[in-house]
Length: 109
Image (cartoon, rainbow, N blue to C red; front, side, top):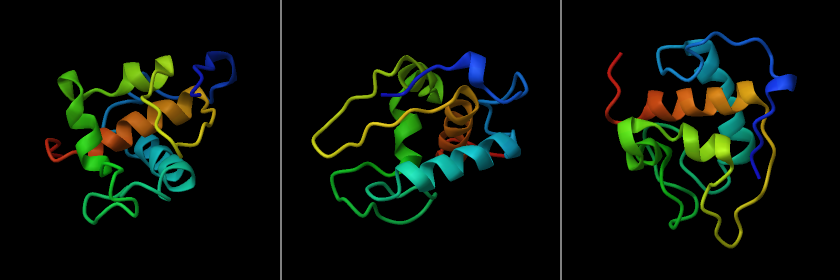
């Protein structure tokens, strides 16, 4: 389960979920590498190791305004057999959102 842990968060700027925020997106990439890469393709190109796991560039596009934040922050990620549970701090969730947006096919720097 993902947690919104505001009291524990490292100070991140207000734009921490924006794809232009390279430091935040770097945090998100590290989170993706640690928790998600076993099943998902976490870079802009490539196939997921698990053929049933969507590629990260497609994940943000599933949500309105290219924004998976409410799903991640509220902890309502759709679970499936084999999906691990893990806790993220606020800055890690923000970074993951920024990273997902950054590698989305819709984002242009």
